[in-house]
Image (cartoon, rainbow, N blue to C red; front, side, top):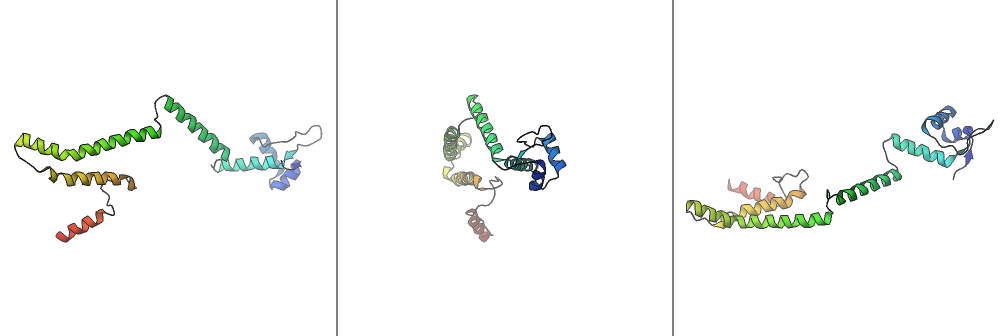
Length: 174
């Protein structure tokens, strides 16, 4: 709790004109400790007024107070719980576990693709191919997918540090 002062003293402390403080009190809800009665002016708690001024400036600047941030965080938490109950959201641990399973299954399918491709070509055209011919391309694809989260732009064709050596070797050939 701050010092209890009258309007003139408050104007001197804050540096604002008396008329400005009166307008803020009437129009914007500046706190009054004790409303004056018959011939007595209002009394103000300097701590409450300075806190109000600070909140007012934060609001005008588009910044949030810690209380506003806490309220916002609580609102988000409630929205998340509602989303989970309505099965619109899944807990991160559950999602990660399921997603990891899908990724592993996709990797396995890609690694088996060489054999499946060799069988399909043989059945359709009677030509035997070595499934190992396809494996480097599949491994390259998996390597690019592994590096996706490292790229800022999400471009799977973006050059990676370990790819730089591959490009240099290609340049030596031509």
